[in-house]
Amino acid sequence: MSLTSLLASIAVKAAGVESAPSAQGPDAPDPALVVLQDIRRASQLADSLSLYSDNDGLDDLPTSTLRPLLLHSVWAEVETRVRTKPGDVDARRTCLQSAKSHYLTYIKTLFDLGVFSSSSSSSSSSSQQSPLHLLASLLRPYATSASSSSSSGSTSMPTNPHQRRELKVALFKLERSFKSALDEYRHAAREKAGLQAGAKLSVPGAGATSAGGNSTETVAQEPDEAQWDWLVLPKRAKRNERGEGSDDEDEDEDEGSDAFVMPGGSKAASSSGSIETPHSLRAYLVLLLRYHALLALNNLGFIDDELNLLANIPASAQRDAAERQAREEAEAERRMGGGNDDFRVETRFDAAAPGPLMDDKGKPLRPFTITSGQGGAAGSGSGSASSGNLPIRELNERQRIRDGVFRPHERLPTMSIDEYLAEEQRRGNVLTGGGAEGAAKATPREERSLRAEMDGTREGREAQDEEREEKIEWDRFTEQNKRGAGNTMNRG
Image (cartoon, rainbow, N blue to C red):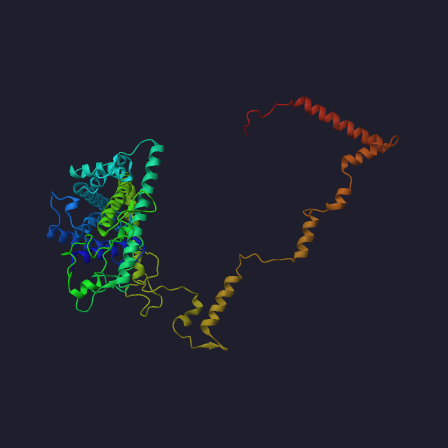
C-alpha cells in the first residue's frame, strides 16, 4: 500500500474512532489501538522515504509531502481515545503523556518549517493583530519546550478573567473561521472530482480485504469534520487513459492540471472574513496544518488539566478503583460462564443431582429436609401405597400442615365481634356523644351559671357557693405559685 493510500485509510479510521461508542464487549478490540498500528506503519514508511530535511522550509516541500506532517497530530488525538481499565491511573497517565509528546513534536515541526512565519511575513503591519499571529504566539512556548526536551510547556494565558474570556472567544472564532474556509474548498473539490470521476470517490486500501489478501478500494464518503478530510481524491480520467500517475507519491499535487482551483480568483475570502478560502490543494493542506495546530493547543490544555487530576488522586482511591475493577471482571466472567448464582463461600449442592444422600462417613452430599417420623414409608420410596384414593405421601403432608396450624400455643377467638363491642361499651371504653347533639348540650360551667341565676332557691345558692369556692381555690393557687417560679432551668 502506498503512503498516500495509508494516510487516507488512517484519516477514515481515526474519524471512526472519535465517533465509536464506548460500551462494547470485553473481548472487542479497541479501535484506537488498531489505528495506532497503522499510524506507526505510516510513520516508519515516511521516515524511510526521507521526505524532509533539516534545512527545508514550507516552500521547499512538494504538496504530496504535506499530508504526512499531520501524522503526529492524529497520533496524539488517537492516543487520548485509547480505552483503559477503570481505575488504572498509570495506563491513562501514560497515554496522556504520549499524546502530549506527539502534540509538542507536531507543533515544533510546524515552527521548524515556518508554517506560521511564512504567512505572517508576507502580511502587512496589521498581521500583528491577525488571528494567525495570535495562534502562533500561543503555540511558540510549546515549540520552545519541545526543542529543549521539556514537557512542561505552557502558554502565556492571561491571569485576568476578562482577558482569558476574550482570548477564548477569539480562539473560538478562529476555529470557526478555519472550519468555514476548509469546508468551502473541500465541498467544491469533492463535487468537482465526483462529477469528473462519475461520483466514484474511492480511497485505496481503506476497504475490505479480498481473498488474495489485497486491500480493495471503497467509496469514500465525505467526512463530517474537516479535521479528517485530507482530500485524497482519485486521479482524472484522462490521466488514467494516458497511463500516467500510477503512483501518487511520485507526483506533485501542486497547482497543475490535476489540482482543483477555486473559481473567481486565487484568493476568495471566506464567509467568516478572518481566514481566506484556499485557492488550491496546497493552500488547503497548509490551512489544515494550522487548523490541527489550533486543535493541538486546545487539547494540550485539556491534557494538562487531566494530568493534574490524576496526580492528585490518593492511593486509597486507586486501590478502591482496582478492587472495583476486579469485582466487575469476576462478575463478567461469571456471566459469560452462564452462572446465575450469587457469590457463595460454601460449595453449591444440587438437590436434584442423582446419587446417595450421604457418603460413607455421614457427610451430606445433597440438601434434604427433615420431616415428621410418620412419613418414613414415604421417604423410603413406598409412595405407591395409598389410603383411599390418596397416596401415603400426600396424606402425611396434609397431616403435617394440619398439625402446624392448630398448636397449643395459638390464641383462637372466643367471642364474636358484637360480643366484644358490647363488653367494651360496658367497661366504658367506647366514646359516645359528640356531633350536633354534643354541641347543643351545655357544659358543666354553663349549667352552673344557669342555676346561679335562680335567686331565692337552694339550687341557686349552691351554684353561687361552688363558683365562689372555685375562685378562692384559684386565688390560693396563684399566691402559692408565683409567675415565673418553678422549673426555670428546664431540667427534668
